Image (tube, rainbow, N blue to C red):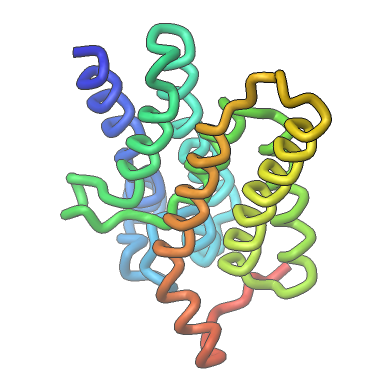
Length: 203
């Protein structure tokens, strides 16, 4: 019953399409018919409304952060289930016929709930890569890979130095799963990058 409870509130939280709701309310447009058609903050930014994009980013972050925090308090043994389900709620929302966003902001919210250090590493990497290449998709994929690799190297190094310590291998596994899912949600972007038609972010 606890697992079902976590699945329900995590999915419902993750599935709220804030980008679509905000653009409908404030500019009367369907974000799915603008730019890339994605419901996330990057595409909302293409409307020219920076405040709406920032608000979408914050709300998408919170919808990943909140269910994981709730799970940490009331269902600590099901934290990682909450992480995955909240993320899947964003990319497969029932309200939009299971066609959601790429999940990067929601992933970041989940990271904030799991580790402040990892979330700051993700942000730093994302910003640096964006400044170099100007592609949000490249930044997202590279930053998620960086978080996974750094965590893997750090834990293996600590395990080598002190084998008696109890390391959380589940965290490494969940970070790898997220990296794979983010690659999956960016498959169209990868195709666009290959064909040199990916849209750059104007800074």
